[in-house]
Image 1 (cartoon, rainbow, N blue to C red):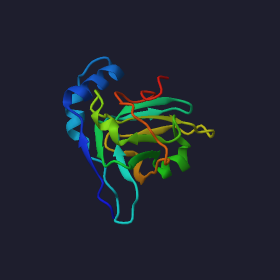
Image 2 (image 1 turned 45 degrees about the vertical axis):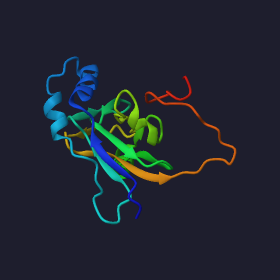
Image 3 (image 1 turned 90 degrees about the horizontal axis):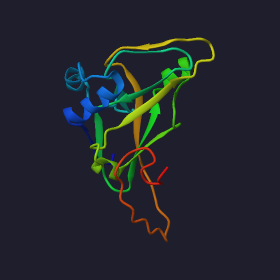
Image 4 (image 1 turned 120 degrees about the vertical axis):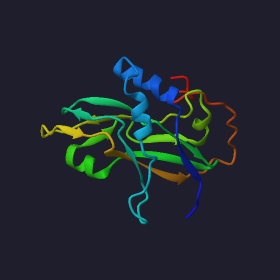
Length: 169
């Protein structure tokens, strides 16, 4: 196994900023960030590192939630963290990531938001199933994957942000 990354929590102030955006105040943010566990694998054979919810969440069919995970990842160059819904939740509730698969690049760690990983999910149930999860329940998984570049690659941009920060959209 290659040891190519390390999970860390973002600062309390960074998490509180995201919490305020969701809930209108930072009441409860400090306790939530302290309670969030770092992602970990469930078994020695697991590929995915499980991400836990920082708060209770109920999603009716068709509802969406943007989750501030409180987590950042320091990733070695040449690797990427891919984020997927937990397979059991996808199977039972058609839980989906709004961007299909989250891509966390190694340079995201140095962004002004501390590389804070956000995961936006939707309960896409077509059977009327309500998804209810408690703080601490795992809802997504991250898998580290190596990647290659073309022989004539000349990328020289610098990232400062998340969604769309490298393409201007």
